[in-house]
Image (cartoon, rainbow, N blue to C red; front, top):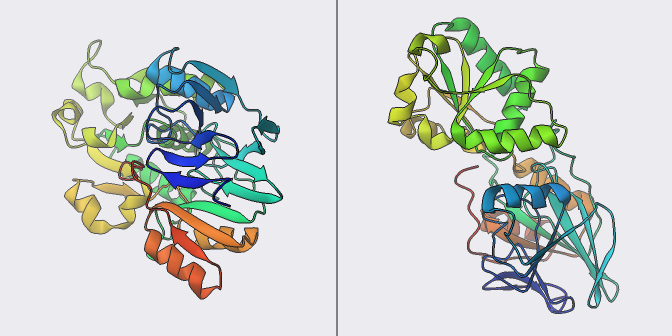
Length: 334
């Protein structure tokens, strides 16, 4: 199995195919699961990824982000060395994919990051039975059981109704989470203009170009108006901005944050969050364990996150498992 995929300092490497998956440094050939910066880096000689992920990388790094780029259509087999590779949806963000590597009768699935909840901004996770499942473990503790996303959006709408004189600043990661919050607000019937921090504009535009309708959007700027114009408005911004000087330009802002980490009350309080929204783009404990049970792998490898708890759970189920101790994959800004 380790000739097919094994961990190296640069990331998962396939000797049989001579490629890396989500490498943390520049390599000759990289297969990329999704566009988040800790998985999709620039400088590789050649990149294979979904159409949307290639567009996201170009938007973030510029058109020359790699020596060459090839589009991987979902469910299309690519012969790479002695391996057959296919990409299947991961349900994480727009364009996210699991990478299925087959060689000599063995199938390994590298999930990248994934979730099992419905998300109107990306394709849902497709379960692929395999011999080895390589999983993340960002929220792999029993305390992390995410509530229904619609209920978290309802909390925001209720606060808007209760405090019509206050702007609601929603801290959300710029790729995936921001667009999901906006689309879910629309699906819940919110039709007002939603205002964007400058860091959000480029990727929101890309999502719309890829067919994800986000409704009326506008820059969150005071250049053409006054502070009171944002009373009762929703403003989407990076999580770091909700407690910064930038936030004080808005009328009595309600600091909101959309993240799986909002399950931890002390974390929300320490971040100055008044309205925590437990909304995650990663699988929670129940989703992680249910996915492993559904796939029925002979072995599980855990890349990053809370590895020990998930490895222990696998052992109790009689499934051989090991942590890969992969370095360079961040989960704090989820």
